[in-house]
Length: 283
Image (cartoon, rainbow, N blue to C red; front, side, top):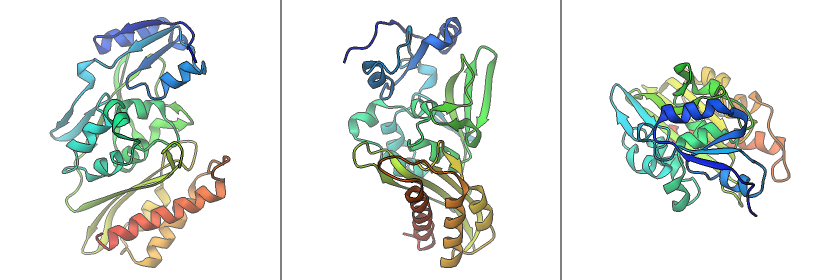
């Protein structure tokens, strides 16, 4: 299909993009990789008056490893697949499960997070890593904890006129292990349920645990009751099963023609258990 007509501007700086957003925020859309927006334009599910292309804004690109790890919003899935495996293996694990090479070479982590598709992979990862999302707008910059960024289906804590600029992640404690698992939708490849887990073991006891879940509910969330229950315990079969149960009971799951709410709840339970079991066995 052919999209409705719109004006197009290729922004050369973040400040220019923010300025353009102020003129007509309801009739203006940002585009980076375009994997969600372009199809919706073609189907006329979205009809913006102005499309702002931010794909060439250099200050939104790149990975910096210093006191913290900073990931520019325009960093592609392919770059994360290749660049962060040694520091944060979960980025390699998750990026390797995203679509195909063509999508990974074009799609961006910032676009995925700002779009807030409830079945996207990166929201679970940034929640599990306790990341902070840096946003820029007409009133300056601020940071939002990842667990507070995702509000509902395709809805985030971004205010009108704000742009997601970067993701900030603290270096993991030595000995932290990571797992990302997902049950893929057979047609789209999106997560019916995706589970990101980070666990630090000291003398076989969990000193820290973090679990992010995507696909199950209207937005990604931290499985906080399960995380609290795990802390200070050994990863025995009984503890793992109870943690998985707590994670599955936390949120009201989505239901559609492919997966009912009860099925998604079951998948959360099984995938959390499998992720934790693989960490306990060191596999």
